[in-house]
Length: 113
Length: 116
Figure 1 (tube, helix red, strand yellow):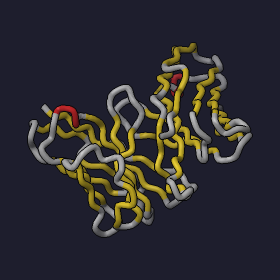
Figure 2: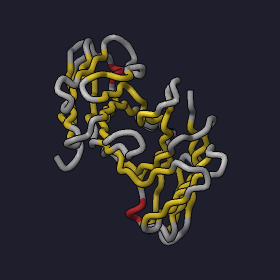
Figure 3: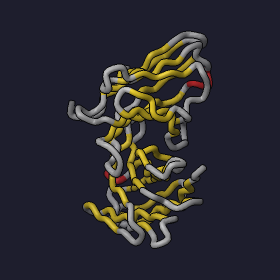
Figure 4: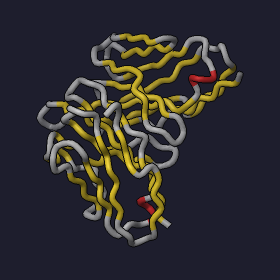
């Protein structure tokens, strides 16, 4: 596609529910990143995929968070037993590799009520 | 871990004025990226700097990385309302093996308001 696409753009869920956030990267980009951005802060790294494998998941806050990229393209960020503190904008980015710029999607605004 | 400090946190200028935003790192910057973000939207890539002393320009925006590679500045000349938004600097974090893979640590952002 022309750019990184994230769906949904907004998600409101009840505390304790399960949510899935989808990222469709730029075609051909092997690197994919998930970030989380709280109000008034810069994005914080969550996880990095190179191809199908999660090469670095050191930013995932706890085991309620999980992400997959089964075919090396679309990625899904999964959050179990959501908590109000999970409310944030979740950003996805993709790049062609080291030394190249990462292109960001518009983000998914998650609100846990 | 690498930390980035941006200054100022917010900036209000009159249209036509020049301005500078700074980004300072506690460690050597192996790649420094500048992004712009409009409220409720994703990040728009502006520029990437990798070499000490490097300077890049695009339209009225110029970014520099100092020789020691620990500070970068973003300068806007003759600001316009379209420049308003949040400016974020991001540093490429090298892992323990010394091979970077594009994982970025971001500053907290600078909110720019330009009054017509």
